[in-house]
Image 1 (cartoon, helix red, strand yellow):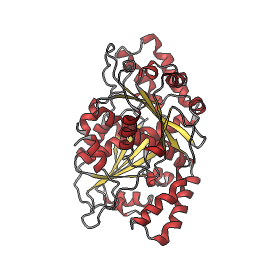
Image 2 (cartoon, helix red, strand yellow):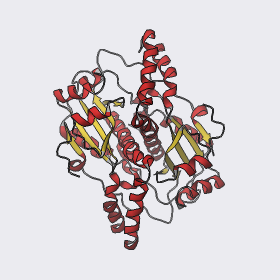
Image 3 (tube, chains in turn brown, yellow):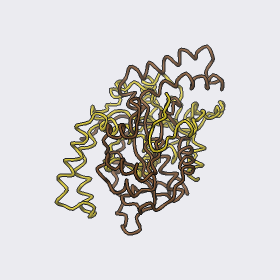
Image 4 (cartoon, chains in turn brown, yellow):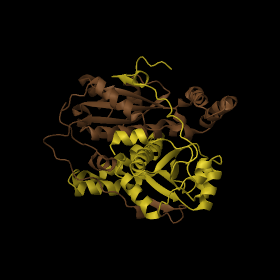
Length: 213
Length: 213
């Protein structure tokens, strides 16, 4: 399936057929490993994934998500967590670059410090680290799922603190996005795709002068 | 090109051939319009795109990005901006849902207020709105580019305030991610892909107990 076909076929599925697909632990891990080919800033990979397949755990998650039916009916849900302290891995990443000859060994320490300082001094940079990169990897995950005939839905309207508590998510992580996976409901049709804004509204050239709110 | 092939071929290109591709205004707008098939929370589409193709404007952008060569050499750069006030469109979106019969007309007003309140009361929700959704659409953009033989690179280590100033980005937006597009350098080889963490490190099942920092 071409990328453009996958984008066109992917829909944010509102209704899943209850436990309609058997998604094994291994098949989901494989899907996630492939999605991790997505880029991340400085290759920090500031993401962790909690796979929820157990019926009782889905009910627990559902309580954090306004009791949405799709949380109960999805075959599996993947909580993509973003790491606010992902810059801690800067040393490892720079060592790889030195091994590959991209960075001279003598410049390594300064580079590690530079990366850490960049994140430590900016709230926006840390928020980006923990939210933008889960966005990359979740999008890759949804397109890969589409290619395999698995329907998906991104879920974001959650109670962060409730999820952190019941899924034992350490403080350094935030739940970035939850991806529900499964078979679309066999009874309920899928409504038309939500309207998209056209480039005449969303695209600017060379600067954003002319923006009207 | 399959999704998995596109993910495998996509590399964060470090060196572009100076102005190696002619990317017209129209072709980039088409690419962006297709990438906007990506989902966004509540279909708010909290994203705007600034396309930078002009040589002088690239130099201006380069000054905000530690004078990286790839900013000068890329054929075009797309600044994907996230809208911290994207929830302002909740009324429009809910009207679409009412038209489609997804939401009963009588429930519309409460739903609009619910969406707005959700974002207004949580800094994390607003940051997510402005950073996670640009992540989705930027990932789609990079995979579509790959499918068309266009190399790309996501750039995130920027001086937010400098970019906002020189590109006249209104306060309600943050630069979420910049995607450079072009032809890979004909002289400089591409180093091996950065190592990825395996699922034994990144994936947890049912909860995150057992995480070791």
